[in-house]
Image (cartoon, rainbow, N blue to C red):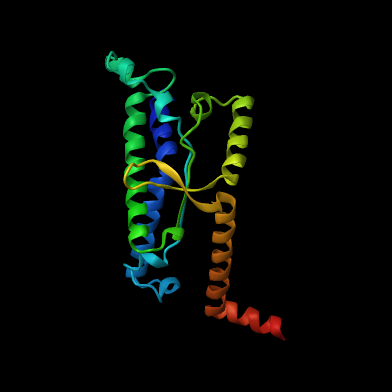
Length: 206
């Protein structure tokens, strides 16, 4: 069991944002292969993409590790310290940040920032941010964090500083509702395009 604990933690921490990049690649591949669901879209037409990326949360950067303390760590300290793995955390967070930065840059360049919604809380306390503490108290705190995050304004990474900042007055909850409405309309259009969908629509009209 111990052998698989670390990879599982890494996957859980990073699959959300990197999964968004994989999803875009998969849709691009389907378009290129002529999937009928995307017949009116070119494989490079990223402005038509709608991406939702849900983060798993992370601790406040200034609280997670201290540079003065890290300078004194040996190999063991970098592998395990304070119930976590600093080396793994650093590489995972760096990878996540680079993917988010890339996606934010692409959607901003295409003037369709609202098509990329990243919901993440990078200000968690140490205990709440841990993936190893499954007490009822911590689980309840996570639920509270999620509920509060819905009420916060949509944040985007500042391409100059790399820091998340409130982008506009729309809250995460409002953004999710907006995206859900877009997806609902898209589904209805696809159903009308398909032979089965047309048959259902005709029967309902009769």
